[in-house]
Figure (spheres, rainbow, N blue to C red):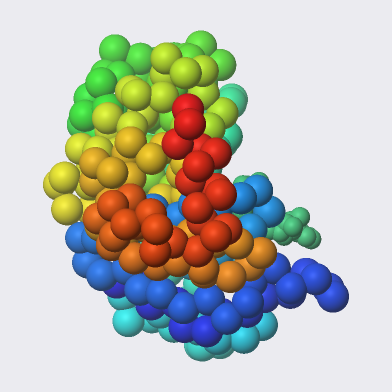
Length: 244
Ligand SMILES: Nc1ncnc2c1ncn2[C@@H]1O[C@H](COP(=O)(O)OP(=O)(O)OP(=O)(O)O)[C@@H](O)[C@H]1O
Ligand SMILES: [Mg+2]
């Protein structure tokens, strides 16, 4: 579903990604972790063509991002993205947040979009909040709306960039529960997260990045079960985050 092939990217002189190669097959859940500044967000934004890269290619469901003929807005509309800061439209109601892109980008009627949006809102447990504005919801609730909004576009894959790291601890689980459910339903997911409980529960593979490189890319059982075989950098990192 996603094939990342020898991707390198620079910000001016600074090389942020170095020869990154990996794949996410249909229905697979891949967790991306690594220290701050290692390039996780950049890599995931490249998959959604939100950031250009200078070398290599990324193919999403058969469509090459590097190919100048590719219709990038069309591709983006099929790749769901959920960010750390939910980025809902503050001046629009929850229902409007859930329907605007369905109508503008996919050409759905208001009725159709509302029907779909409200079904998804129900699925993330927030049906009663449809008429509210984002500012009237908690962080965890806003993030669940953001997930519902992404799902309303019928994405072929979902990308998450630290969806729970800006939340108060007691709101983390309500968002992770929605993500676990999605994973169990067979959604293809690439998730930047340090929630190792989530990774252990639903990830197929774990990617560990350091200084712009994919240092580890292995099955979950191997990543967590065979710590001795991990790189020193991954060991240090795991030792730090698994203490908590
Ligand atoms: N627009 C930009 N211009 C220049 N450098 C940037 C830009 N965006 C990110 N960088 C740099 O690229 C590197 C990777 O950033 P990125 O945000 O991908 O890291 P990350 O692994 O997601 O980190 P974090 O865990 O803190 O979110 C960092 O050194 C960052 O300072
Ligand atoms: Mg990041």
